[in-house]
Image 1 (tube, rainbow, N blue to C red):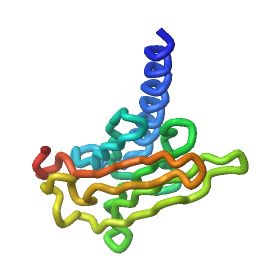
Image 2: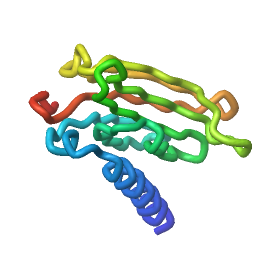
Image 3: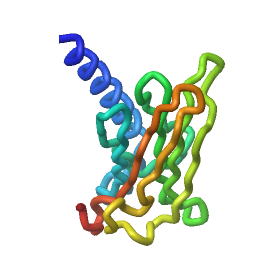
Length: 147
């Protein structure tokens, strides 16, 4: 029962984060239907984080993963000189979030159909507890093939 309740709380948190991302969508990005889907695995559980295009990266929230990591994906298509997909992993410390990993990918990504999407399989480690977060991302919709 406790495990089911924990999953419900995590799912609710993920849902709230996704709603925050959807609320910041520009009208054109929503019409195109293009999104970045990142699969992350931590503690033996895998989840998908869906990131729609945003006009400003500052409103995109980080999602709590376990009790230590925060995971954030920013998908910005416009303006053209800032178009990119950025993935951040933070340590959730008492004094605030501490960046552990940042990756920037061109938009549109080059190898979106590969086994581990356009990012490849990434591993991020907790410096204190020795835990591991794995993630990979793919582009979906808007004419791109969805694996």
